[in-house]
Length: 579
Figure 1 (cartoon, rainbow, N blue to C red):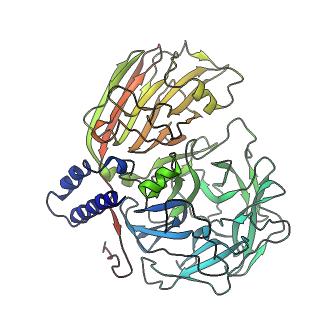
Figure 2 (cartoon, one colour; figure 1 turned 60 degrees about the horizontal axis):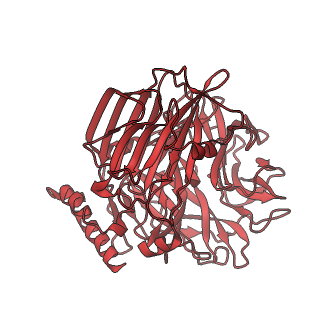
Figure 3 (cartoon, rainbow, N blue to C red; figure 1 turned 135 degrees about the horizontal axis):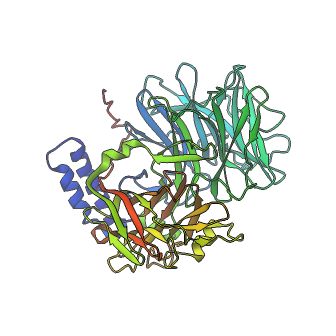
């Protein structure tokens, strides 16, 4: 572990040199990274993670005085989840790519949070002042809601926070279980000038979004009815509730209650982030979903892989809504302890209502393009059945690739079966090694030269009674020779017309792959731990194991530079960059 930390320190020194603009420093940074010991190779290059220890839920993301803030559940002492010791880690950025790690914003120091400062959200109050609402856990494990505000509103870094003397502001009453009352959302201001906030809960075994109201953001009253509930789920963790525009591609503020909006209710349960879209009546506080949770064959999720406890915020500077999500490890806890860290955040995504109005679409924020280099392009290349094609000229272990496929012949597509209701199970049964007619075709990512190791992200096309079905899979079954890692296969259907095109984008970053199918209609995130396909020994292929030929209409791929991460302390505060 000491040797590992030494190499991290060396890299940080070179990053500081690069940040200060010394000639040739960036090249020296990239070359020295080639010599980092193997046990550090799983650490990512451009995904957010603290220097060490455990991280889970993203909390309270916001934009304040020209600076992006990300808070997160953090164990300051170890690389495992720690009951009673979780703090709010805090980092800042000017571009959502490069980050400065600050001192913890909240620590469990008071009776109302002595067993942990758990998840919550940030709300920008009238006048532009931010406030954090979070769940505290008392010594009896009772969960309560608290508020903290900046000590110095003129400080754009928001280095210090003060908890309100009135805490706790909300406590579990009536049928609310004391351990089922957590994770407040960003609050919104109604037309009646009253604040509203949702708290996640489970009542009588039913997942519930409790609704509270306040006139002053300090004194809160529980509404006589919840915003929504479901008898088909358990506890709703980390709920989120926000509007999306029905006629614009821009994001909108959480308090926007205009006529051209729908509302999204997200809840984390059953290990995934599920969402529904519907109509919110701000006069009566009723929410009418178009399709309810678990009530349809199409169970909408943000991501069909490893992705949980997400949080959105409205970026008023660029008029967009941005989504963060926790991506946990898929190796053994002993591995996390050995390497000294655990958990990533997904790369931030813009999120908006799809043109169909039936689902959301997501896409990596545009700032990621500043990390691209070594561009490779390819158009109009046919790949016959049973063949693969290597994408060369980039660093395959640290890359961004976009590819669109044209399918010349759909007539002979395999027929769908009524029992194919579970796409993840279907992807497991028809994995990348199982041949078909139209597919499997897609990408072999983090692949060793002899294909002993690879992660396959691919599509299959089936023919139904009146339309085609496009299945998207992420197959980790051959991702690593290690035995203790989770090699589950993930899958979902993509609502696209294969007669037009099928597109795929994958962000590849050593131990994480984020894939976006159908221009972000279906997203799958996986964690993988190759032993052979690391660094310069990693390869990237386009493959077609179906009998029908496919055509690459367009392919663009890039190596990715490393994002810059810095550590700041109370003695060495960050410097303000003047725009």
